Length: 174
Image (spheres, rainbow, N blue to C red):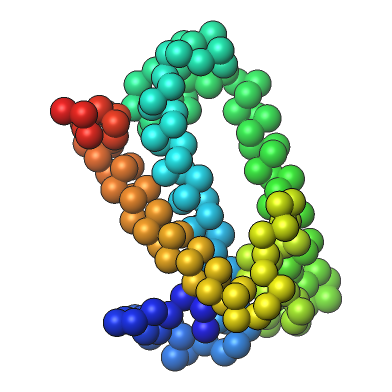
């Protein structure tokens, strides 16, 4: 399975994989890929948002402070637009990967389609997805590893900023 690297190999300390069937493992992988991608964007958002604070044309350069304090400063219309964008993206992802609830068995809610590969919604505008299966596994492993690191980084950024409300870049420069 992509994502297993030495020295850990297939790391599952709580035994979730032992108790899951193939469909369950696909759901776990879908969640891991999705959370990893969101975390990678979050880490970039933390660093870029704090670096350009007060110097961008957006929102009349009024959004300042640490990253966790910036989103509440976004004007009401913009946060609704952000929520609508995320909702549209999630709706598309659900239509691509999940079995229609009307067609799923009552005891198997949230079934993924048989031909769906976790995380592959067909969005590849730059044509980076390898056609060779071995190269695809290597790329998928790299994405999973970067996503795992980003999840830890984002959690650390959130915890640090929640404690003292200082930005991450501010901590790095002090």
